[in-house]
Image 1 (cartoon, helix red, strand yellow):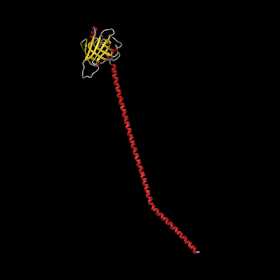
Image 2: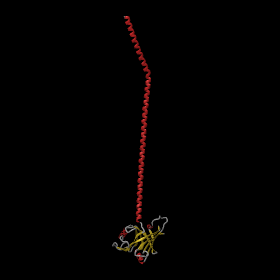
Image 3: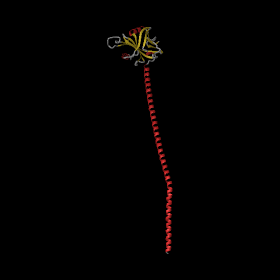
Image 4: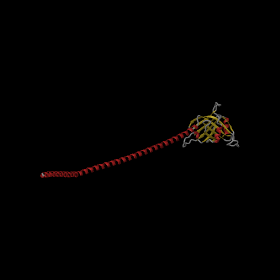
Length: 284
């Protein structure tokens, strides 16, 4: 019995020893395996870390490149906006200049048009006037209310002209010199004229600018379409520039021969023959 129990005890202990040995050997094998596999695992981990770092760096580089591209796009957009603003400013400036030029052209055209309107047509109103002891003034107007387009003062006394007209027909010729170097202007704009009355030289005639006295006289005879008479003086002592004013007013027909010759014929409905007064402007 004891022998059997001792055998069984030995068998049991041998089995336990076997299991312990097997367990220890298995654990050692696992440790060796883990030790063998740990470098591989660490290397794999390093590779993963490197991969992640590469991905992070590539992501950062992508972000940087995106940031740079967005910055460049912003700069280009700002430049494009600046170009658009400068082009729009230039366009506005050019438009302003064009409008200013157009206004200046229209203003000049209006002035020329007003001058043209003040010019003479084929039918004009002529007025001879002057103080009894003064010189003859002659004015041509487009109509009775317009400013004179031609106003000259003759050296002939008005009393002498009245005597000439009483004796018959009167022809007054006004001549001026043609200067080649001078720019061609209207004949009625010439400043100085040689005067001839019925072929006799009568001094010189001078172009005058209309003044307050001339305006007053023409305003006084404005309602008169044709006729002659005397206007009262200013009440002062009679002199060459005061006293009664003699006048003659009529309509004239204007005939333009060339740019250097014009003629004005007095239209008298009571006369069937030649006009009583004719005035010729000649540039020779």
